[in-house]
Image (cartoon, rainbow, N blue to C red; front, side, top):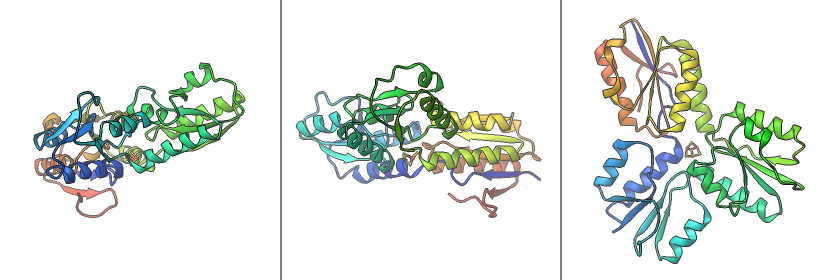
Length: 295
Ligand code: F3S
């Protein structure tokens, strides 16, 4: 008899859940509702929100009224200023953990420290953080950048890190900066939701025959989960919805693990679990050991 085990931390994190709830609460209440960029990397949710009237904008050009919802990644200060100047109402879905980083870089810059952001410089979260320290941060995306990138002479740097960054990689980068003699205070701003999801994925993938990771193909946190799981479980598959899953590939005696990226709605996870359970006629167990998966 096979088992399907679902990681407890699979799916929406606190920050994404909060922003999505804000959007649904504002729909129908706010006459014109805009989201600055896609709220999450999930087509099912974004299509649903769009059908209910949430309009995605990539900039504020041409907007003269309405409400602007800021997604959990956050944005730079300039966008708040621009929205205010245009008379737009702001609904701030910035995750409080990201907001905390904004405050750190803003305050530390004001204290005269240089700012180092460890993370992907093209990611909206990092772009937003940099926008709270006058776009003056040194951005280091990997060990190579930490070794080679010019770091202007400063008495002291404050180091922050993208919330979804991997702890082990961050530690290596800090070591490199230390070796380069950078005087720094480190603010470990990696989000525990990501860490927890990754640790659980790692543990679960060691104990199963097949691992299913559910999430958008363009979601970086989902891709990281796939990477982690694939190291432990050669039979790791990445799917966006149940439609991508070939059930024939799963035998009835297989132990199957399921996790999902931060932008995967509970309904999609549930659909995968239920469909697989029905197909395999097997019991579903939670990672915690309870008899049924909960959503
Ligand atoms: Fe916030 Fe952490 Fe999610 S920073 S958006 S709760 S991954």
